[in-house]
Image (cartoon, rainbow, N blue to C red):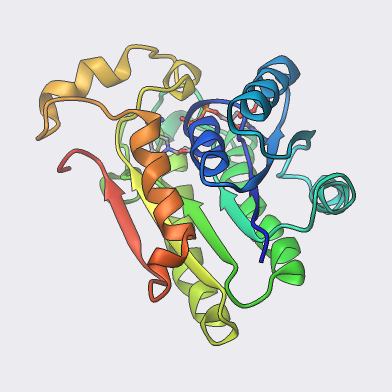
Length: 244
Ligand code: NAP
């Protein structure tokens, strides 16, 4: 079976590292992004020249059902049907307590971080055969709850954990594996969206391994879970949080 991976939110951070990691292992790559076309196209150029695999970038807001349906149809046409899905997209907003959160923010967080995982998995399953696989990107926040920062984000990751468990059991008998990674503090731009670009360095002293993680350290776990080396692994979680 030829391997074709779709990485949602794949143009930066952990998603971009995963795209490169999978390209190095021969996967055809579809990078999904939302707003930053330049970052996505730069990554496509880099992957094609460095790894000589087919690679495209497709813009879609994956919290929107119609755009998700179109994303998968465009991928069928321009690359190949998806065999390996990485539900990686994730957003968080300015740090605040629950008492200050409004419905617009909470719903946006849940639509992007949870609804998109359901919708993208639904479209992927229609195309998948035995041997195909899905990895969801959750967070250590599903255990800590992120008090005073973004409990909405943490709750969305709790939903991703439960989604992983449920979907893995629905698909186990069909030979499609579903697993999850839970990163801790990783050096990406997401922390700037929360209003604190230096967050990883601030907390690194509280991490047992005394450092933040790199996107490539998460990418390697995602790639392993997708690979045939993990052929008996489903409904499982890998925490990548330096001991937290
Ligand atoms: P990031 O650097 O902020 O990148 C976010 C990516 O998501 C970008 O490619 C962005 O595209 C895309 N995106 C945002 N909204 C989208 C939407 N509605 N539709 C499609 N794409 C969208 O994020 P990251 O830190 O790599 O995080 C990746 C995953 O890891 C997330 O699920 C996050 O929750 C999880 N995680 C991260 C950490 C950490 O410390 N970094 C820790 C635990 C878990 P544009 O740039 O085009 O908008």
